[in-house]
Image 1 (cartoon, rainbow, N blue to C red):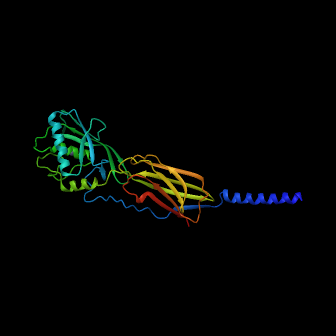
Image 2 (image 1 turned 120 degrees about the vertical axis):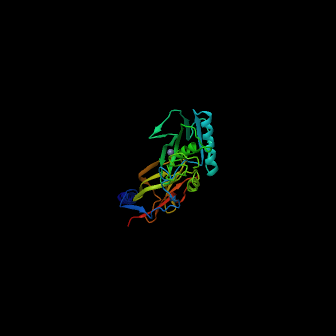
Image 3 (image 1 turned 90 degrees about the vertical axis):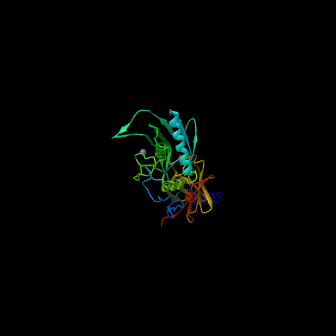
Length: 305
Ligand SMILES: [Zn+2]
């Protein structure tokens, strides 16, 4: 009865083979789509006046901003320090002096610059700005003081300091940011409120998903997405976890992502025995650190019908 034994063995192997084939070999592919567009709790609406700044929502990463003064005679250095005290007194901003790697660089020059018929008293601006979905994050600003102020108040240095915070000129002659100096000029209440609102957001990173797509073929998963940091500081290490129902299908370590940067992650034919095409797919950013918004850390994908 050797031949019956052989035939039985053959059929057993055939069944195992077919089951293996069914289990391992991709059959029909199922496309997954985002369940709903990811609404964010985080909204930074431009309030009253969107012409305050060169770009929308320009700020440094923290309300404590470092500065360094180099090459300035005592009088101009003193005016700069009084300007800093003035802005600190009016707003929630704080400034601290460093010897290198400063955010705002203050320098001085004695050369006479003339524009039209007016002397240029100083210059100020931002030199390095990173655009994100939420803010335009200022990495560096500069102030150049050319002439001593003739006023009791540090009008010129304050004006240039405001430029280095991203503020542009005002059309109101009594405002500090009016293009020509008048000793009675002050920072307006609307500007003060704007600064305090802008810097009320803590100095956190904010990772979020973009362009998430996934396909299931049998027990294989294909995925493609971008993680972007729309926060104010570079992110720490985080992990993306992909769930099918409650089962973990895949974990991907992200590493640090710089402000404004995104990384694209793509995986193909990821063997996922736990996957079920009856369940929705969830992509979750597991970030063990503070973020501006945690609600954008999860997206749910359902079968495209
Ligand atoms: Zn100016």
